[in-house]
Length: 327
Image (cartoon, rainbow, N blue to C red):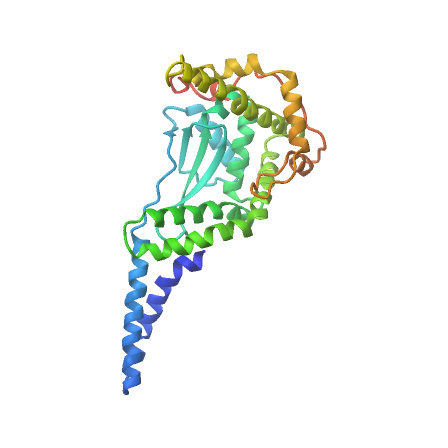
């Protein structure tokens, strides 16, 4: 991937440096033909390098969380950064969803510098207790740092990097970006296939990073909490909200996020919890999803059985966000 991006700039530079030698050797018709061909190839390489200079990668969208509107949350992030040798986190954004993730966005045409964004799902803040939310942050801040294995961290983020190149070349108006788009359209899924198990290993590595800030018993409970909460939100909460919206001609009778915690506390049954955990334990490997299975994650931390999550008393949103930003 790096060579694909650097090929045309390096070719242009190599041809430029060899022009003087080629010119001095052009004392025959064949020599002059070779000299002209070198110039034409150099100009072509420069032209194909030009789109790289004009690349602008869109930053992950969401509400910016900073020290002014989320001071406690930023204190937590700073604490975790100290734990993992101060990895660079340029932005923290809040957006819909349950996932907590991180993304490296290239700053210019060649992927040697990037902007690191920590992406926090609103539902994760609202539906997880503070310890579990802190653990999710820890695994991604740890992966950004690469303290355990810089190579594994690098491989973990590369597939998303090449997807960004593919998408930005696709949208680039310059005609010369089209060959690069075709190249990355072929290369991106090929790399995803090759790096599939490296990404799965990266997910398991993230769990080991989380063990730096919590114990294995809490981690086993967190695995269960994540599965149960996400299942409830996707299978119980949002279908009900969509049903209410259809009844009210597209407008739900209330803001859904304001009622999410209350519905979760009152609507989650022991039967649902047991059923969802049983399904997760009996699930078979999905070769389209690099996320490890529950059994693999438990084995990775030395457990063979999931732990039942405790009732949700205080949420991460209540603990880490003040009333203004929470609202």
